[in-house]
Image 1 (tube, rainbow, N blue to C red):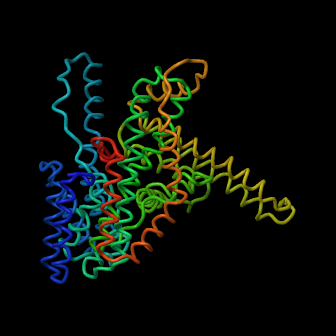
Image 2 (spheres, rainbow, N blue to C red):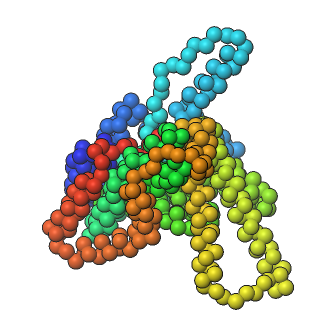
Length: 484
């Protein structure tokens, strides 16, 4: 039951009616929402439904023990135990095949007979996301016992909230749980919610699906059959596809939550319009970036021990962020190269800051020239955009070897091959353009809807939804981040 299906539309309509019917009956509402969360998650694979209470209740119990414990050593052991339990659960499903292959290689190396890979264990959708939410609550309580939540039901609702449970955004307990008791219907929130839902549907169904089916899949499967220009178009198409796919999911999740009276923080902020990698990671998958910063980078020491350790901690954080996506060389390379890019960006900034701090004689005054500034900003944008775009090849390719094949095909301009459909170009421009004008379109839609009667608002949303569905292909692929 995905967000883009008729089944989900019927499910959400029923949930939305009961959501506001039971709004004043706090206890009944919470149990209803927990049931809705369970039904939604079980619709994908009922076998994995017990994972939600396993993560939620273990983190709640750990938080309760942390709230009662005074001994620092005791608190460290409690934190380590619950973190190990949840990360172990995540590692089992995410890295099972990798570790089995490693063990099998060792068995073959000593001359024993291989037993072969057992039945495939599919990865539970959303486990990475709701496990990280549970761990964020636990670590917050460890750092500040006042953050403890006494009600296990509230923690379970936080971990299992169905609009965000599959692919985020990764929420924080102190932001979500207080909203359970103070929701009220607000017309502007409904209009903003519908605007985000329409935005998400357009990004996923029209732009991402078109690019996936008309160039990305073909180029990444058989790059040698396409011209260098077509391969370059495929690389840039995947860059736009993954943005529209994932930010489209986030728009849908945030919009659905708004209709239910919950505010969820934005997850993307114009990431492809920036001129340096630091700003890219401030705008791309914000909830994961800030999670890694707050709970990994800072825990490693951040920048507290000087520049050298800051760069080391940045590299560790980005490499582990890459491996979070899977135990493959391509994800390791993706995280390592992004980490290297961030280290270089920070090093350049640190050198400039050190030079400025040494006094006026180290400053080179130059006259203001807005055209020159625009030119250099344009070059910096091109460099960052293409750096990010080419690294996405590791993300999409089947393996690191296929990624190198794609790079070679993209640079072999003397080789003939198939071209690409003309409509790929407007699809690419639409993906970039939405980042430039998407905020203004959203605000304009909300203002326009606010001036219309309710019946006209409903007709407008229905007509735009029908148009989006007509523009999209038959059948919509699952969201990319469901595999993580």
